[in-house]
Length: 209
Image (cartoon, rainbow, N blue to C red; front, side, top):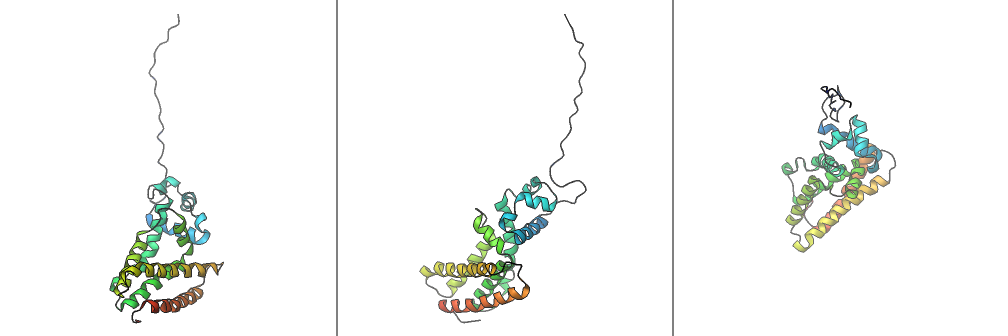
């Protein structure tokens, strides 16, 4: 009968390195993620922005991105908030009539839309990507429309008309150009939008600013 002499067995366990930033790289900053995501959207449209393509651009693993954002929709929300935060910036300090505030807010929103048209389309396509800042803009618009003494039953109707007009104008401007818009072209589009917006606001009422 064979007998085996027992010997202590040493197990060597290799610890797996955490997925994320390669060694020697600085910590991944959220602001850099958002900026790079926006650049991908501007250059390649909605299909060009995936968690994998973003990770590749940042030279990290996708897992490093999931430490900041649970999914692509959450990423889009944060990118949108970063862009649209500029729309409401200084709004509460703006002095003028209610009509003037409406123009100020919608013109700023339009400019952000034509600067990043692919961002708008991505938000429309993605579920659960409605950013907080767009809701803030919507609330401001509704309050301003109410201040113009628009009947309550028509306030939401006018809100939808103004928002749809702004979105439609920005999408049309983007479709008319297959290449990156020059600053001059953006200025021309913005001036045309402002003229058309004034005509539309005349239908609501309120003195021009």
